[in-house]
Length: 496
Ligand code: B12
Ligand code: SF4
Image (cartoon, rainbow, N blue to C red; front, side, top):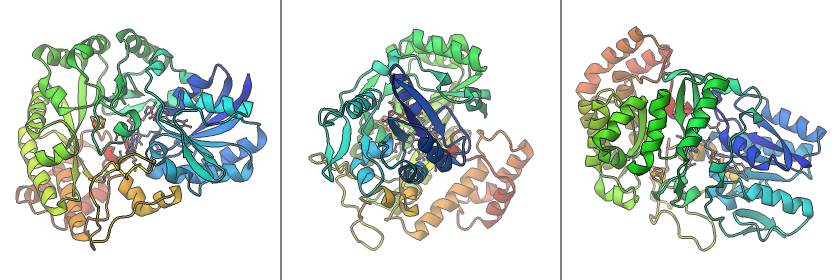
């Protein structure tokens, strides 16, 4: 057995769910290394805990999982505390932020190496090289510093190996704490069935992580895992973390049969084209399986923009999917990207009109509003920038993305990563979007909030009715006051 490894999921939310990234890595490491996991969503004093742990034990390395946004801020603070407590201990980052911005992740930060893409094969290879004292050059998927300069090794080829390993749910402390009440059930679990996504939408971090590759699990694996989650932890509902649950219909049918057999209410990410094209027998299976909600990236009704993003879906498919969902008792959760740099004001209004059209078709459809924030051009040598646009701010100046992790942890760039603001969005437009969000959210309160009593939702909805009807979104101060009393859960920030 080699020295132990510490894996950390930095804080992102106060509602913990299974930190699958570090759990999956623990499974990959466990034959050789004992693994300890620290979860910042459970421990508010993560930096102090991590520092105390690394000062008292001899770890081979510490690995942190880092999404852009609030988790990056937390990851930086923890990494700094670890570096101070154990200056020689190698610090490794993996996850979406370092995969998309490897150069920035290493620039001026206390991070020694970053692993791009899935880490199940790269992390053990790195630990082996560190233990043997051999060169890091041959390790695909690794970015590191040689003589102070950042070196990016070639990408690692996609592998479906992770689907062969059963996940060790007891790698985390008190696994029961990760199942919580949601509107799906009393003990909802997070679960990922398939790996990757076969599409390459140009704005999407998933495309940067998997580069258009996907692998579906065997139906037996899904069946075995659902049995286990039910019997071991009392799971009564599932939130599927799959990037895109509905792949090709023929491949999906055995998985849907398994879900229909278990009959647990479930939630997933899906695409409008897949749902619109699903056969009648497919839909009746979906209904039997108790799919409750499907998160669909609509992005925009503008066909030209959809083409530019390589989305591969069309506005009429969105409408068809919404209609199918309505007929089969599924709530579509539709995500829009407002204010694209091409025409922030005009495109935002076009999205508002389309949303009103959808609400007429299926009033219970949930709407998620994001600002369109293209991925930063990849800083890897030789790769084409993800966005061909020359982005400009409201003053016409060229937008410069941060070149360090500390820069990306600035509030304005955290907001950018979370799709809450962008340099080309004027204060006036942001106000209009906030106004629309408030009026829409009050007129149609989210069904994912399980705490607010029905009368409170009805009061909100009645209060917003005239504004919604007359499209009067400006300064909805009376609704904002009501919202202070009725604080609805925000699935956009905190998940279900
Ligand atoms: C659950 C979840 C959350 C949870 C928190 C999860 C947690 N860590 O505690 C919540 C709901 C809080 C959340 C929030 C956000 N999320 Co989120 N989330 C997910 C979700 C659905 C599942 C994550 C997961 O468990 N995946 C399964 C594991 C096994 O995969 P993985 O995390 O990618 O890990 C692998 C690799 O990345 C790598 N790796 C990861 N960590 C490490 C660490 C080391 C050391 C190494 C070597 C490798 C490594 O190896 C792992 C194994 O292969 C994903 C979608 C998805 N399927 O991944 C989105 C996703 C990660 N989220 C995303 C985003 C953008 C966010 C937000 C920042 C913004 C938003 N509006 O959604 C917010 C932040 C909101 C806020 N608080 O302000 C994006 C990331 C893409 C991007 N451009 O960055 C995703 C991909 C969704 C999407 N399709 O857009 N999220
Ligand atoms: S289909 Fe969804 S997950 Fe896949 S690349 Fe496009 S936006 Fe990303």
